[in-house]
Structure formats: C-alpha cells, structure tokens
Image (tube, rainbow, N blue to C red; front, side, top):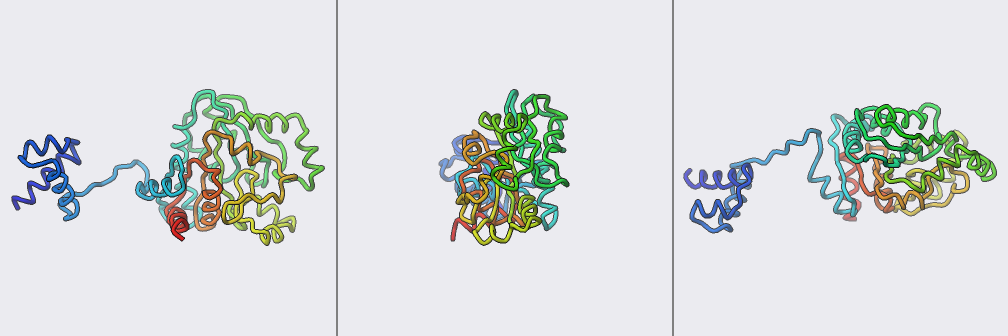
Length: 307
C-alpha cells in the first residue's frame, strides 16, 4: 500500500497539478526517470484515471489519428447519440457550429456549400464577426435552398451576400454559359477567387447527395455511376480514390476545383453510414484541410489507410 500511495502521489502531482517530474523527483529523492515510471505504472494498474472534459462528445484520440493519417490541419471526430445518418448529422452540426464561430474572422470572405448539415450548422451559430458570404454552388433541390444557408449565417454576421441564383447543373454547356453570363451569377463566381475560407459537405453517391438525386430524376445517374463517381465536393466529382472526374465540368454552376484548391482553409463536413466512402474519397483528393465527421466514418477512413 505504501508503494501504491507513492505511485499515486507522483501521478497526481504530475497529471493533475502539472508539476514537472524534476520537482517531484527532488521531493521523493528519486530520479526524474523513476517518476516517469511511477506515473506510467499508476495509470497501467488503474490506480489513477485520466478523464477528458471536452464540452462536446468528441473522440480526441480518433481526431488526432485521422488528422495525422491524412495530413490534415485538424480533424474533429464526433460521437453521435445514436446510429444512423440523422444522428451523425446532428452531432456534426453541433460541433461544426462552434468550430466555424471560432474560425470566421472579421472581414473574411467566407464560402458556404449546400446541404442539410451546413444548414443545421449555420442555424446553431449565435455570434460571428462581420464577413462576406458567398454561395458556392447553384441549387440542387427546392427542398434545401442554398440561399437559406447564407440567410441563416447572415443573422449574426453582417456583411455582403453573394448568392448564386441558378441551378447547380444546366441541361447542356450552352445553357451553362448563358447562366454564368448573368450579372449576379458572374459576380458570385468571380468572388470565389478571393475566398479566405470555405465550408462544404461531402456528397455521398448515390443516395447521400442532393446532386446525385437531381441527376437520378433526370435519368442521368446510372452512366455516371458506371464511370466511377463516388462523391462530390462543391462541383467537383471524385472517384473512390479521390481522383477528379471531368464528366460534368461544362454544365456545373459553382466553385471550380481550381478555385477550391486555392482557398487557404477548406472545411469539410460529412458522416453517417451513407457517406463513409465519399468522405474517404474527399480525404484522398487533397481538397480538405479540416474535417468534421463521426466515429464510424473516422474508423473506416483509418482502416482505408492501412489497406
């Protein structure tokens, strides 16, 4: 018991009170290496516990491993309250809203992609510095208007808005050229060259993407799936290995791959069973700097690195 008490004392002094091992060693009359071994022993034997006190349900170990494995600036791995896409989306939105509140700076030019996750995220943000808001893609669904995303954030961040009043995809390249030539659309597209930060969701093909749903209604989804489309970010289509597929470039309305790649900070949101493979593709593409996802997707992404 005396030995155990010494080990616990050393561990508590170092882990709880932050005392250097050198100071503890001097007090106990041992070397600092011995103190290090005492701390390790106390933890391994369960004599002390280290409990994280993060305000949100986040797996810090998975977050670090994911960022390291894919060379990200950062990753945040949320722990959803339940299984399924809806629970994952809610957990990601709750954490992403706090993250974006910290990332947005005064006078930023901030790009917002489409999607329910971003809509939920922006609805939760309570305060933000003044910044310009740019809609990154045209509209893919009347049920989830991209303009609503911008309006949600503009509640708290006063600045200029650059909405993209257009569909995300035109019927053909001629129609796309006409749409891009409209003054309001042209102004928003040009503003994308100046973005400081951009946040977007990862679209999981075929069932977790608004764009894929739109193409399915038009009878165009099958051939695109046969050519290997697994995900989309912005207007960029990716295969399972993260390689860009130039299949709809001449018809898409929104941020180009080149514009997206040049944004200093690119934040991707995505998770849930329907987006595991899509998130992995996005990570492999090199177009993601910061990722907010869920535990299941993070584990799948780490397993993909080991294969």
